[in-house]
Length: 387
Ligand SMILES: *Cc1c(COP(=O)(O)O)cnc(C)c1O
Image 1 (cartoon, helix red, strand yellow):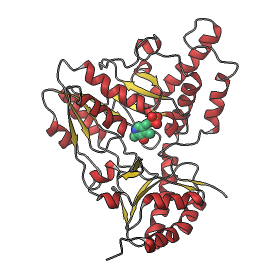
Image 2 (image 1 turned 90 degrees about the horizontal axis):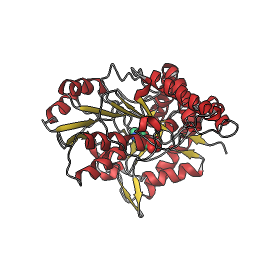
Image 3 (image 1 turned 120 degrees about the vertical axis):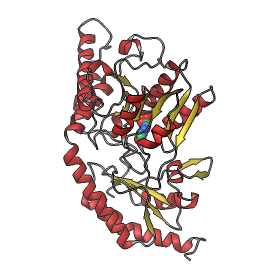
Image 4 (image 1 turned 30 degrees about the vertical axis):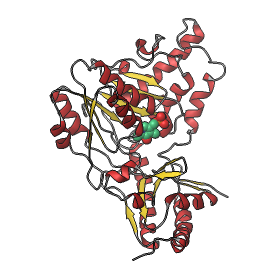
């Protein structure tokens, strides 16, 4: 059975060029990148090449504004906690949105327990916040604004440049989680007035466990890691040389390929949506189809549970996901779908298909071949009958 992978927002396969870049650092080029002898300097050169490539992909003014981390979660934690702690003598107010990744939201909740106040901006029914909302929420004691570039569940792309401009004018640090945006839309940290930007390698066909935080020069953030002089003593820990080398190659290629990549996955995504709409009644799209990541499709199927649909798809070798978190047997509806006004029932009947470079028209056809039958059989068994 050929598997059909449509969960690229969860993770992506490492591409051959990236694997090739990484392999020597597991074997003959194994040195510690902080050691002074030849083997160490060789590994360090690879780290610095990756830094140059990452800085270039974001149009950072300086290479030393890139700090390597273990991934998106760490970068988000560091940005939010680090900026909040560094500025806590100035103020303890943070602005974010209701649809951020949990790496941001749970970090904000952690800070709330320690005396910070957090404004969670609501989003429109199609999944956007506006720069005006951010501006209206700013207070004299606001020390950080964190708004994601693109949402991982519904793919909506936020007006980050406008938000950045307002934050810059008001002297407030601006963080954006760009984990889903990198490689899909072009990013320019200078043009967009971004102070802190999180990214992750495994979402762009790089390895798991590697990521970066862009920290604009002059922006103050407290350290999360203590001990170790790596990353200018701001993020200690022995360099993950293979992961960092892989990240550098992955982001370089992803940034170069944005136009072709976006066009390809958008065409497949649109064909999938059109086919689903034709074949299945009572399908609704979650989030706007404008200003949306090209590979993201999130659709609600009335009167079914997404977990049942996903299990049936899995039996046929098709991987997709729902935004719901299954905790101790009960399903918590996605906070993103609730924030755009979906009922808990509608949220639990929603599925995210995230398409990527490895998908083909045959993959789309396969989903269109089997999904209508799965949905209609589940609906026949459903206690929630059509009106
Ligand atoms: C995947 C993801 C993260 C977490 O990144 P990891 O590298 O898996 O820790 C954070 N934010 C967004 C928007 C994501 O999609």
